[in-house]
Structure formats: structure tokens, C-alpha cells
Image (cartoon, rainbow, N blue to C red; front, side, top):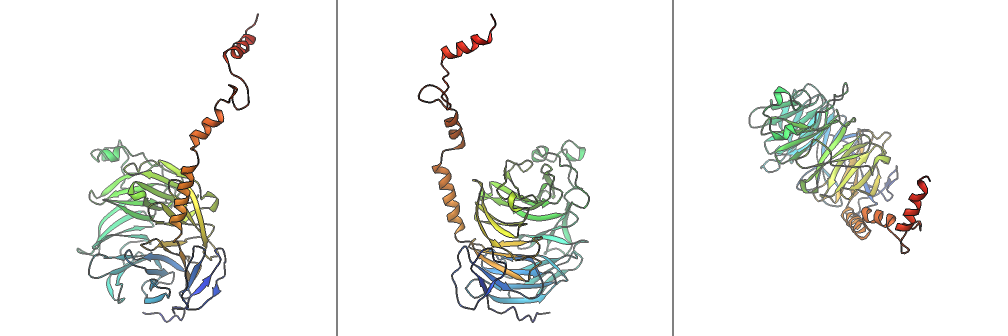
Length: 422
């Protein structure tokens, strides 16, 4: 059923300040966005609960808490709605699927465990499964034109193959299907599994899968039990679980060309893992802890991560070197819960939304790579921490330390002689 919302026009509201809660009313005139500028896109009456950009162009899909799904064309300066329809009672997540096939589909999932696929060009229904899961689906991941993965509230990762049937071709539980090293079930699981550390016990009600992403041959799941779970689709099993971090992980993304994996936490810390060593963290970044918990994140290139934090703001951070690059602005919302953020394929345009607000904010991110280059150059120009430490403790021209105290052999012998009794 199509919407008739008058707000889905091409008119835009613009705001020239980054931290303004109220957007100034604007017109349809073309405008050049800057890092401090944003565009407010009114979409109706209900809050936005899901966002996703197409991986090849600037088509933006969104889902609302009242079950409506829309696709917008954000390629030009005039944002226009392409498809509008009510597909679910409440949309949890959306994703473009079948990108390499002749028919490009939009995949959407609901809080009731249902998923549907619609033609992204015409809006026609292609596939639906109202009983895919027994609980709400939290996240979607397109694996290839025929397969996609879902993560749900009960901690299940399910693989669906549209060539076979609508039932899940594979379902694995992030806790129940994990066999700790040394157990009888773990024998023969391979060298990678034996290197993994045993995760701590999850708290009651905190075993869901919050976010999933893809690495070659593996699916990475950020779990609410405080672990990063690695699933092998080829071996059809949970390959390993990370150490227990004591707080839910909210997002996970491969970075630095796939050599690093970054996970966000509710405390605002970013946990870094090395490729092939996903059982234990290799580094930790605390540049966003003052901003509160990380609700969602999306990569902008291989070195920059834009995080939507519990202070309702979007923060751009650099991954190695660790640095907070900029605060893009604030998403208008009474609460910061369940913020959503997505980036277009080029990384030049960002979209943010919240279930508390019936609007999407589009941000220009074109300056972020330059800010990252400046940060890298600044780190290279400054002496390293080790050199600075050596300079502080090094000797001065008079032979003493930084305090001017001489440390020659004669003075040392006299000092030691005073400690020995007659």
C-alpha cells in the first residue's frame, strides 16, 4: 500500500550549523554542502529505524517504525522519492540485495521476524517470508546475489538461499553452537578454533546479534553478550569467539583494507583486532568515551569511521592513528537510543536518523579524508613518544640529568660511601 505523505516532496530543509536542533526552512534551490552543512529530509510522521545506501549509487533506503519503506534518489541536489510502501508493522533493518543480478532488490526485515524482498525499481513484491524467525531480526547482510544473512534478538545467525527455499539454509546460535577449546566437540575444529579464548557467560537476555559484516569467507557478528563471533559459511559452524569484554558490542567493520577489524561498544571504546587473530584485541581506542556509547557506525574509506554516539552526535574518528577528527553535527532526537548512520559508496555523503525523529539528515563528508591526512602528517612531524621519553630522561650538557644532578663516578662513590657505617 503506497503512502500519501505530503512530506515526501522534493523540498528540503537546510541547516547551516552543526549542533542546531531546529532546522531552518529552506527551498528547492541547489546548494553546495560543506562539512558543517546538513540537509533535513522530512519523510512523514513516524521515526526512522533503518538506513542503507546502495553499494553502486546514491539511492538511499529507509524504514520507519510504522512499517513503511522508502527509496530516495540523493544523486543530485534535489532529493526525490522513488518508491514508497508499507511493507511491515515495524521495520528493523533494510539492505539492497542482488546487486550483481539483473533484478536489483530491496531486502527489509521486521520486529516480528519477517523479511520481504521488493524490486528496487518498481516496488513490486518479489519474495516474502512472514515466519522467517520467531523473534525480531536486528540486522541484514547481503552475501551474494542469491544469499543473505540475518541476525536476530535470540542470538541466531541464519543464512537464506533464495535459489532453494524460503526456509533458512543454515542457522547457528552464537552461544549454543560454540564449542570452547579443549572440549570434546572442539576436537578437529582446526587450528584457528584452538587459538580462541573461551568467552565469559552472557547475562540474561543479552545474547542477541546486534550487527553483522563480511570478510572473505567469514561473517563477523557483534553480539550483545560482549563477544565478537566469527562464522564460517563454508564450514557451516561458529569458528571462534573473542574474549568476553563485559559489555555489548554494537557494531563491527573491517578497516584498513581488511587487515583490521573494529568493533564499537556501549562505553564508547573502539576495539581493534588483527586479521586472523579475532580471538583477542590488538589495540583499544578511547577517543570517543567522553561522547558516550556508540550506537552505530559506518566506514568512510579504509581509515575513517563515523560513529553515532549516545550524545546524539556524529563523530568522525581515525583508525590508526587513533584520533577524533571532527564532530559533524547532532541528530535531533529526544533520546539517543537506536541512532542509525549510513555512508554512500564514495564516502562523500552520510545519512543519519533516529526512531525518535521523522526526518533524515544528510551530511557532507568530503573533507574527512583531508582531515585524516592532516592528522597523519602531524603525527609524522612530531617526535615519537619513545623519543620524547628518551629526551626527558637523557643527560644534559654538564653530564647530569634534566634536573642538573651530576652522576659521575666520583659523586656516585661518595654517595655509596655515606651509606656504609664506620
